[in-house]
Each structure stands twice: as C-alpha cells, then as structure tokens.
Length: 115
Image (cartoon, rainbow, N blue to C red; front, side, top):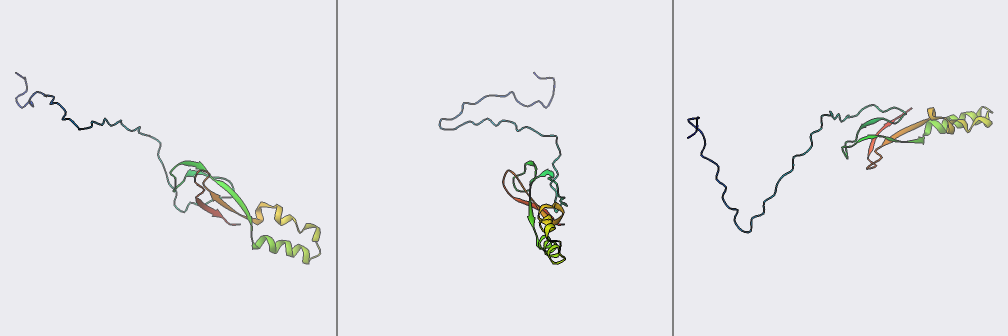
C-alpha cells in the first residue's frame, strides 16, 4: 500500500487500438533573446540592424539611394549660376539623395530616410 492516503491508482498501460497513429511531439527550443519589432522606427542613412516585421528574422537592412527632386534642383542651380562643371556633384553626394531600407531576405520595404 502507498504511504499517501490519496495516491492515484497505479498506472496501467492499455494496448493502443489498431489504426491509431501515435505521434511524439518534440519540445521546441526556447530562445532567451528578446525580440523587439520596431514600429515606425526612425531610419538613418546607414543600414540598420532590426527584426523584419514580414519574415521575423533579425537582419541588417539593404539600402538603396535614389535621386530626388532636391538632387535635380541642386544640379539645375549649379548650371544656372554658371557653375556647370559642378552640376554632377549633387548626383554623387549621398546628402542629396533619399535612402530606402529593404529586408535582404524577403525584400520587404522597411522604411525610408529623407534628406
């Protein structure tokens, strides 16, 4: 007899009926790393490390620089004020361009930095 007064009855293994499939579940690994998903996080001109909201992977963003109206206006101003040899400088300067951030895994749009 058991030393505990309310002990459950002893375990009895019943045979598994025919046609029933037994699946053993494997425990999932637990990560202790906190995940922060930035919402409308401010982006800078450099690639940023964050968690992509589309694929949930920690990534370093892929950046693309694009010419804007501001870039063309600076080039036009250089031409108008007879400084035409410098008209190509705004197209070479990162300060005259907007930067768009994308996820390198799933190509999702992350955000933009506007100069």
